[in-house]
Image (cartoon, rainbow, N blue to C red; front, side, top):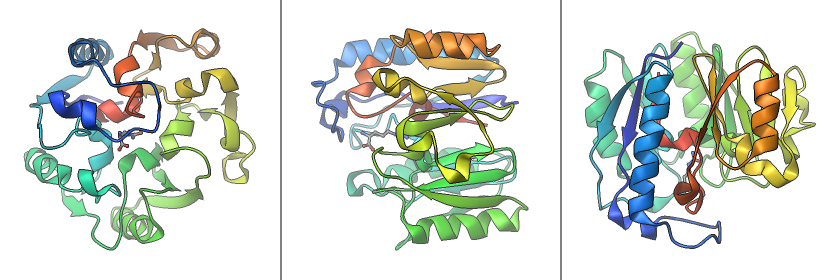
Length: 253
Ligand code: CIR
């Protein structure tokens, strides 16, 4: 069960965020509207939402998931792999200090984006990507160990972050596409295969029995619904233009 979430309002400068999507520049007023709807959706799942102010210095800072990993035992401030995102951690550190949790840090030369980390009960899968290096993943492993938690790594081939390609929906159900469908390290999961033409929807988010699914991916939404979940479709088209998905927009804990 999650009870809280932290989100960060997108800034006007989001138009200058990192992107490989080739879908054009995001429309800021539409992005603001979609962000508000996203907050409503996660509130509907029972979360109390802390909303942080926009920060024009960091175009990608609305993708708050990447800068911190909150576990039930500790919060880990990451060291984002993209240079332009490195100092997003300063603001989140201030917010995290106010929570009643021990705080840990990933440090140079280790880099880690928490979009690469997928929690499955007490175990954390860490994607090795262009953003998360082996040193970052090893630091994470040592930190988690202190708190009785475990982790393992998965090397990524084609996706930005691990959770771009897979999402854990609890009850051993794993939403996946492409390189993850037959991955040996994931073979114990009940794999729910996302159609290649809906691959963006592989980033869906389980919150307290509900699953947030990006709007516009009907086959995936139906598959999740048929598996017994309550689905909530959320339009995040403007965030997709910056390679961001549903999970990146919040820290849930
Ligand atoms: C970036 O490239 O860092 C942002 N434009 C998108 C981050 C998306 N975050 C995520 O998948 N966890």
